Amino acid sequence: MEASAMRFALLVAVFAATLAAASAPVDLSGFRAGGPVEAEASANAITVRWSDEQSRPWSAEFSLEPTEALITRIAQGGRAVLEGGRPQYWAETGKRRGGFDEFFDFPPSHPDGTRRWMAEFKAAQARVRSTGNRVEVYFHGLRLGIFSGGVAYTFFPGSRLIQQEAVASTSEPDTAYYYDAGLQWDARSDRGTGNTMRTQIAWYDAGRELRERTLPFFASERQPVESRFRTVAARVPWPRASRAARWRRSPHRTSTSCRATLRPASRTCGRARSAARRRWASGNCPTRTGDSIRG
Image (cartoon, rainbow, N blue to C red; front, side):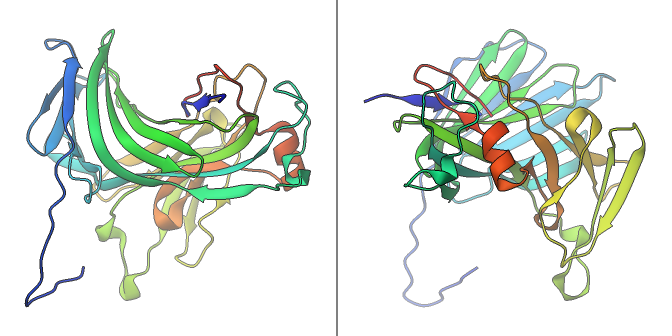
């Protein structure tokens, strides 16, 4: 079999039985202590600590409980920037005809059509490893339709950037795919009357002009913008702060293009897609046996 890879409250009071899921085990054998990025594991959490470009201390805590949000808290000093974060991924898959280099194939015209998947994630096991002066924290337990694998977070010394990647594979050959990568978090302080939410986002357009937009609660969560540096920022509760998401091109052997978008209504950052034929003709991501793709 060929293999293709991508690295891309209910309370019951009486007579109720509760079953607590076991915490995910952690492998620290690949981690080297004493570097600029430190990590430690407890019975139910992994904590990473490092300093940014201004020598300010940062920390990120991940939960090892499968039923809880993966990112418990990301904080600068004692101030939380993000709490209750969950990785989110969507993928649309189709069949590639004519081989890997058939760049202008149109998978939706295949007799099998295309399929749309939303990821399911429950941390099953974790691994912390050092790569140079960086540290990667990987959580196995991601299922995205025909893909399965995990989610990895890379921490860079002297930087506020945290890279989130899905690391997954499929045994179905000749798969063409699109994916949306995102992060959803709890923003209770932004909720208004009726549990509604308004989202403020900012970005630099192609002409290097700063743009800002406030989206009402009932706006579509798919709000594509053409942004310079593929970066969009969303306002956060505490002063003079924002959470920014930046996208990069996937390291494919053919040239592909992806535009950035923000899913503000659900507080999710992700990738945009163009019209159907143009999207599948020039922007989808084909797989080939032996390729390694992270996204």
